[in-house]
Each structure stands twice: as structure tokens, then as C-alpha cells.
Length: 145
Image 1 (cartoon, rainbow, N blue to C red):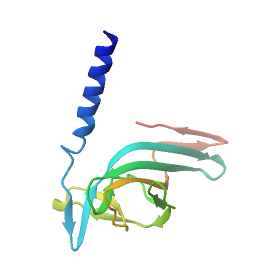
Image 2 (image 1 turned 45 degrees about the vertical axis):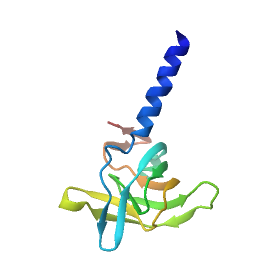
Image 3 (image 1 turned 120 degrees about the vertical axis):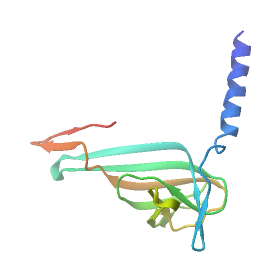
Image 4 (image 1 turned 30 degrees about the vertical axis):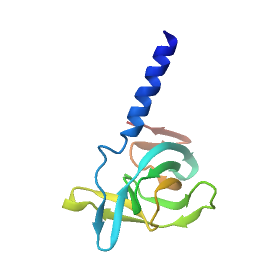
């Protein structure tokens, strides 16, 4: 019985991973650049509460897959900085971010100034949390939803 459950789990996981991009939004072109959505497979965050100067700094590391050649796009609520992009076995390079509007003016997303080939990449970045956080006399209160 255990082997049947284990086998079914593998089949379900394989089916789910094979269909990851089935419902992804399509890539699009603006000018001469093709923008592609990414599949984030892992995200790690380090939150640093700086009580002395009333700041909350987040260091993020995203592991993502690009399925087709293009400029990767993703969503970010806060302004990001210090972006470093790397691929397995390669040294990281500093990249710049740019905010673009989706076709139909439905939303704005972030892209980086580096066209990527299909593959797995890592992106490190810094951002600041300014909402749902308050500081007072050597204490901090924050909430995440």
C-alpha cells in the first residue's frame, strides 16, 4: 500500500511540474525586446530590522526558470536595488531593473536589462519594507499578510 501511494505521489508531482507553464501568461514584444514570464521555483528572504535608523531591509534570492529567450519579467511591490544575476557555474553579474507596463495597461512589472536564454537562474536583490511597520523606542512592530 505504501508503494502505491508513493508511486501515485510521483505521478502527480510529475504531471504538475510538466504543466507549470500551461497556464502562464504569454510572452510579448515591446519595440524590439521580447519579454518573458519566469517560473520562480525557490525564494529565500533575509529581513533585517534596523531599529537605530527606522529601516527594514530585505535581501531576496530567487531561483527561477526561463522557458524561452527574452527579457525576464516579474512583479515587485517595493522598489528593488543591488540586483545580481547568475546561472549555475557562472559568476554573477550586476544588472539594472526597469519598470514596464503590460500590454493593455493592466499592470506594471519589473524586468532586468539582460536578455536570457532558456535555463535556470538566480537573482539576488535588496528592497525596503515601508508599509505595516512602525518603530518606537528601540522596538519595532511589523505584519505580513
